Image 1 (cartoon, helix red, strand yellow):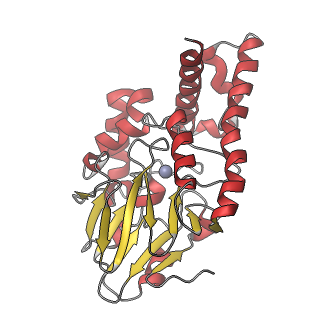
Image 2 (cartoon, protein in one colour):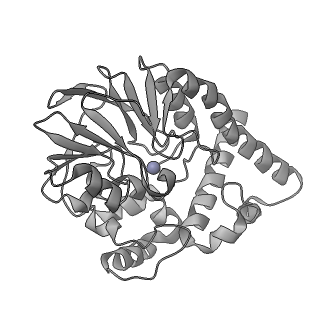
Length: 301
Ligand SMILES: [Zn+2]
C-alpha cells in the first residue's frame, strides 16, 4: 500500500467492481473530504469512523460514484459544472444516462417513480432501481472548476476534465502527492465504457492519453486494478483502448455478414444478450452500437 500524507484510498466492496468503486479520503487534520463515495456503506463508515465529513466530491453522476452521498447529509457536495443539474434532478440523470433516448419521457417518469420508492424490485444485472439514486441526488450541489487549482484544506487538487466516459467526467490530480485518481478510465478487461447518451468514444480515447501525460508517480483506478505506477498505467493503456477497436471490428464484420443495424444488439457488442433482459443493459447496448455506427460514418464521410 502506498502512503500519502493526507490522502487514503478506500477500496470498495467486491474488489471495487461495479456497482462499487474505490473512494478517496482526504484528511488534513482539520477537514475531511470524500471523493466518489461508492466504496460501499461498510467501507466508507469504517474509513471515516465517527468523524464528520465536511466535503463530498463527485467526479461524475454515475451510481457507483455517488451512491454513498446520502450517508453524509451534513457535508457540502461538489459536482462538476456540466452535470451540476443532476443535483437534485433525476430527469437530468435520465437524459444523460440514456433512459430518455431509449425509453422516452414516460420511461423517465416510470424510472423516477421506481427509485423514489425504498423497496422497488431490483435487477441482478444493474443498479437501475436502487433507492440510493434518489437518496444520493436529493441535495443541491456546488460546482467546482475544471483544470484549476483547488485547495481542500492543505491538499491541492486539480479536477482534470476528461470527457468521454460522461461529458462532465473528470480525474482528480494531486500534484503535491504525485497521484491521479483515474476513476472510470479503469483499465479493466471489460474495456472503456461510453454507453450513456452523453458518452463519446473519441473523447474517451483523447482523455485517457491526456491523463497518462500527467506528472504523477501513482495512478489509482476506480475499479478492480487499483493503485499502479505511471509506467504500469501507460503500459496497460494501449491494450485497454484497443478493446474499442475490437468492438468496432466485430460490429463491421456483423454488418458485412448481412446483419441489419437494428438487429445488432442481439449479438452483444458490449453486453452478452442474456444480460439484456435488464432494461438498462439493453439500453446501453443500443446506445453503444449507435455510437460506433456514428463514428464509422464520420470516418467514411
Ligand atoms: Zn462512471
